[in-house]
Image (cartoon, rainbow over all chains, first blue to last red; front, side, top):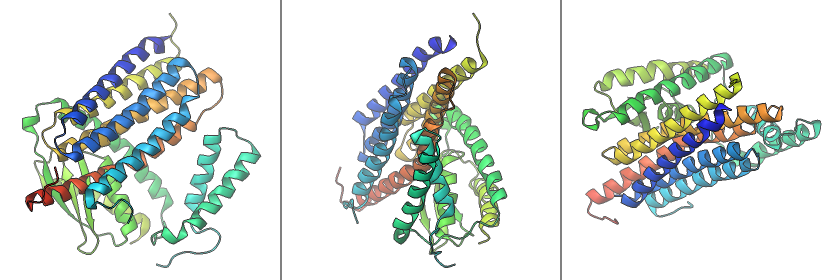
Length: 90
Length: 165
Length: 107
């Protein structure tokens, strides 16, 4: 299967992407950069979870990916709102 | 424009929620369809108080055409952004665009700004409905006037036509 | 070694998807200021993960022999939320820039 050869490569590329996000997360410089890095890290984590699902041949990872997508979005908006005015819930 | 009331305040939303429910449950049976339809009916009624005034879609077929154009543009935009990101960063010309809005409804303006954020090297930052302007940041726009004209022609004109506003 | 069309499609989508995810993150890591950094993740990473999700969809449909549309929900959700996250983040960045300019920095 061709997919068997491509999967480790895709996992490597996404892993490298997450490493770069981590670099931005640690480096900053502003808080917004760190929030953006966290958001991108979550989106890449969704990709990683989906790839793991293909590699292990199970559908059990679907819910994890969906919940990551939702939590990532809510977290990003909450952090950005905090940065915007200090109040998360108006 | 008045807020639509009754049992079906958001028919498109009801259809979308029903479809998503059946897809996520992943059992294409009558039971899951009925359950999805119930949720699809209940959710728009429950969140009606939070919903902004929404103009009626006049040209659904044109909306499908716009959707296809946006999906195509997303792919083209990404190849373009990839080229810019991987190329020398000193050659980038990031600029602020000040887009005058012809749309009257905040709902439609939000759709326009979401499209702008997803397509060629632009992110919308601020919508000022009182002053009828949108602030947009462009990753690489040596000619701001041309970039604004492209957004107006490709996305705003069809949206105006679809919602007649 | 026989390669089925579905196999080829899944492999292609996986490569394109992870490639774009990486490009978005490279943009985040190397572009010079916050507003330009915002462009990489909102577009490239969203499309990249969208492609991986579609690859998973095709793969699951082929291996189980049943049409699997669940994964589409994730792509749909990502494409709806990406502009919103970018918008609030850009607004937050502008607000804190204004605060810094006014000399009330909290960094």
